Each structure stands twice: as C-alpha cells, then as structure tokens.
Amino acid sequence: MIVIEESLCKGCGLCIKNCPTSAVALIDKIAQLGIHCTSCGICLRVCPCGAVSRNDIVADGAAVCRACPVQCAIQPGFEGACRRYTNVNGTLIRNRELVAASDRAGKLYPEIPDRPLITAVGAGTEYPCCKPAPHIVADRVRDIEVITVVTEAPLSYSGIKVKIDANAHIGAEGARVFRDGAAIGMVDTEEYGAKMLSIGGANILSGKHGFAAARTIVGLANGERMVLQVEKGSTLDITVGQPPIIDGVTEKKMRVGCGSATVGMFAAQLSSVVDEAIILDHHVIGLLSEHRAGEEVGMTYSGVIPNGRKSTRGRYFGEQGHGWGGTNIAGPLQAVKMVDMNLAKPGLRILVTETTGQQAGLLAVQSDGTVTEIPLTAEIQAVVDLIAANCEEARVSAVYVGGTGGSARAGVTTYPIKLSQAVHQGEVKLTIGGAPTYILPGGGINFMVDVEKVVPQAFTWVATPATVAPVEYTMTRATFEKIGGHTAAVKPVATVKKDV
Image 1 (cartoon, rainbow, N blue to C red):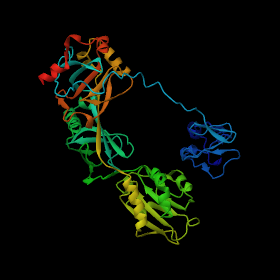
Image 2 (cartoon, rainbow, N blue to C red):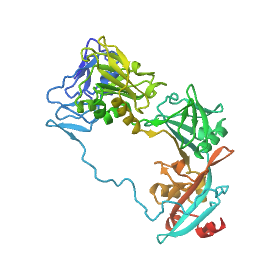
Image 3 (spheres, rainbow, N blue to C red):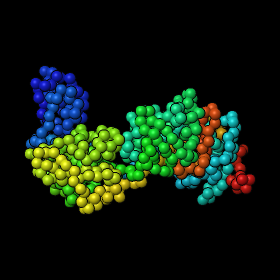
Image 4 (cartoon, one colour):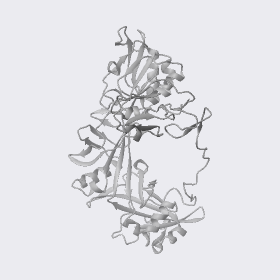
C-alpha cells in the first residue's frame, strides 16, 4: 500500500502527472490518494521530496496482479497501472478479448517469387535516372509472367546499423563514433544483449567526413574488418559475422537475458544449490530470493541487498561499467551492498555471477553481516555452466538502411509514385542483392536488409559521396504495365543470362 507523509509533500504535482490510473489528487496543495490506487510505485519513484513510501499491506478487496514484477493491487471494478487487467468480483480479467486473426498485414501476392529473376550485383547504373534501368528482364514463373528490374543505385540516403553482442560498456548513447579520427556515426540505443551503432546517414554523408563514412558503410556491409573508436569510450575491432573485440578483449557470449530473466529461467536450479543468488547485469540485476521466481520455487527473502537501484521485487537497476555483467562491480564482494541480519543467518551462501555465466564467485555471510568469499563447489559451478551453455556466441551483425524513393524509381517507371505505392501494397517485391528487405511504413521506399544475406561484396560507393546498393524490383507483368513501367526495355531473362 502507498502511504503519503503529508508533512513532507510540497504539492509539486509530479505524482499526479505520472500516475497511470489518475489515483492521486492535489487537495489543499497536498497529494491525496484515491481508493483505486494500485500501489504500482510510480509516485514513489518520481517524488522529489521523499513523501511517498510503500508497505506490504494489501487493501481489503484488492486482487494482486501477477502478470509483471510490479504486482498491482487492483480494487474491484478498476484496472491496474498497465490498463490491461480489471478486477471483476475479485478475479482479474484481461479487458480485451483474444484476437484470433489480423488482416492488417495487407494482401498477399503469392504469384511474385521470393527471389528476383537476376540480382543487380554487377548490373551497373544508368545515369541520368530518366533512362530505363540497366536490365529489365522477364520470365514465366508458375505460368505467370514476372518482371525484375535491376540497377546499382547510388544512395545518399543510406547508412548501416551495427549490432554488437556484448555486455561490455562501450560508451554513452549518442556518443560519436570515429574511424581514423573522422566522425562517421554514433552509439545508438541498446538492444537486447547488444550494443548498437548507427553509421552514416544523409547528413553525415554530405558532411566533411562523408567519404570516410561511405567507405565504412561499404566496408562493414561487405564483411571487412573495421577498427572504430567511441568518443570517451572503447576501441571496437569489428567484422560482421565474427565475435567483437572491445578494448582488445574478444567477447565470447551474448547474455541469456537480463539478470531478472536469468533468475526467472534458472530459479529452480539456483535454489537447489545456494541460499541466494545475485545475477549481475548492467540493465537489471536479479536477486533470487526476493524475485517472484524465487517465491515460485519456495524461497523467502534472505535479507541480502545487492548493489543497485531497486526497481521492483528482486530487480535492481545496475550501473554501466567495465566490471562483471557490464556493471561497475569488479567482483563478487562488491555485489553485496549490505545484509539485514534480522532476516539472514550466518553461513548463508550467496552465488554471484553474470548473465553469461563466464565469471562467478561464492560468498558466505558472517555473524556481523559482512561477507567473505569461499570456494565454489562443483554442484554450484554446474549451475553456472548451465547458464553459460544457454548463451549464444557473441558476434557482430549489420543491417544496411537505404532509401530508394527518389529519382532511382524513374529507371523502373514513368510514374514514380506508382512504384512507391505498389511496393508498400506488396504488389512489387524489393530485394537488395537477392536478399529480402523490410520496408519501413510511411512515405517513400525506405528499407532495411541483413547484409549477410546479400550477394558477397555487393556494395560499393561513389565520390558524391554515396553508397551504391544492388536494387531489384520484382512484380508481375500486369503490375509492371499498371505502374507505367518501361515495357519497351523488357528482355527475356535467358537472353541476359546468356550474355553474362
């Protein structure tokens, strides 16, 4: 239950602005709680005055939601903080019926093959763009005439997203990324178990380091080794398809999940060999006995408090650094902030490990509440090895991002907007070097493609500067004619292949 200490409340209103259920009101410049407060704890986190606290009391009639770690206490007739569940006569009911099917994916066109009749790799470029594309070929596929239009298109609106599987802290989000002293991109927001880089883009390509950016995009997309430097951060030695080398250290494992997820997956095994486990992670540190998964396997809270900022039960935010699990914690002893000896007993054993299981230590609680490191047993090491065995091998991957919604369309059709519309409607299939693409919604033709699925060494660059991508549009003959395609330039695919 949430409690507001009125003598500390300054009436700032932050709790009201952030409350997801509008359960807080300002009365006489003091925050007051309504009966439908769910004890989600958001007000506790945002209050700058320390006026909010939470205890373990559950209000009469409230049903405790178990759908996430927040565990809202929801009164009859009201919803929880996420607005997904409603307390109906003491039972929590999902307030939206199951949707069995969706028609939002659009119409499917099975007559269009998944692969182009030919790729654009080596096709060359016709300039200016008003000319028909270098090759427009036709063939019959499943008794339907299909056309593929190919060109190697210079794209100034292009870049590459690089995914680096690593826990290691490489630098702040938004930090510039350099190659040989030239700023060619930035550190992007982190994805699950990986650091992300954004290299290139129209503004960087048109800037003073555009040539370096173009060379880097093409080099990465073609599988070449690149050494990059993050501003106030790490040196990255990366090759797509290979393990990343960060500050001279080769990353071996991609984490199995965050610290909380690791506890959730391996609670039964962990609880069978230790009294407590701290799974270190720069995002969320997991504490076994306090976690809901610990409760599920019969554990009660041990009194151990890990080094981190508490989020919800058994989940603590870590601080990024170069220590275990990508945190600022250099070893198992630093993982424990304190031990509440009102709950803990001397001899309590605490396993400290990472989400990759690559490093681990065992601690024992002393009578004065301190901890000392003791040797790992074989049975405990076996559980650590189980965590490691469930981790994937760390590697670098990349997605080339480009826009073909401009003049390059004129090589396909005399009516460019019809090509854009047909691509978005699924009537025209866009591939890059023979590889499938994801088309971003909205205007234009903006795509993403996994560079490892593209024909090898498919990307080049020109000194405008821009990168050059092999672009293929595949459609039925009927669609090609409907969008105003250059029908006079169509050749049988066999003729082109024979010439090759």
